Image (cartoon, rainbow, N blue to C red; front, side):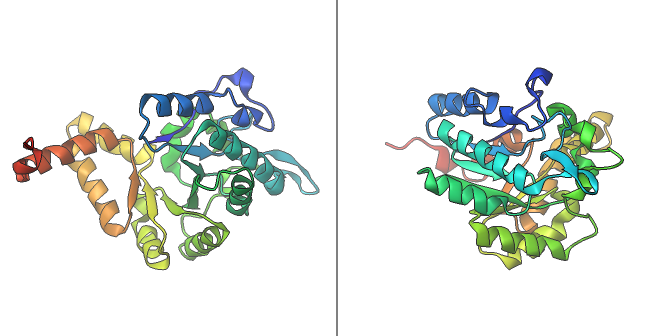
Length: 274
């Protein structure tokens, strides 16, 4: 299960996003509660500052000789603190989605030094500056950064027209110690998923993001297509492209449908044993 903080109280947001590493923060409390309620559950936590910063950016903004800009190294230090806080809470895997340079290596080094060698890293290696993040940004309160004229998220997320950079990013994250790599979004980037699958031995994850899911759900509500069939077909396409792991808001229903199909095709597998 991958968890994200939704609607962080405005009073908790700051320029440096320090609520992200609060040991009593929403994510940290949730991780503990999940492990207590479901001991065998694998919990993945997002590492990024956008839900916690006043700007809604994934990193810390500061003054530079060229004007306000995102401070990569300062942000990496904050992300390390966030990842350590999540590890202390008991997360099984941290997932840096911020796209800062060098953050995977810094997080791996810090986790190991703190005795969290078993905490994995799912790196958002190929995260594109996509319009399909809209519903999610509204939910976590980071939409304000998406369209800022002087600085938007395209300054650190990838250009949707750039195919080759994805392989460079994957290679760097793998070298820095990532345990799995992510392509995000999924549907419009099936070619990238295929390229990444052929370039690494690591597990490849793909994120069917909020806008992708919302399109299918809205079309289903309008009666233009069968929502469940379309959602399952979209997931099949992502899997066929090479994804080993799929993050989707349709996960629970997809699991139910797969179970139903398995029960129909192989009922003996569900018969009680003596």
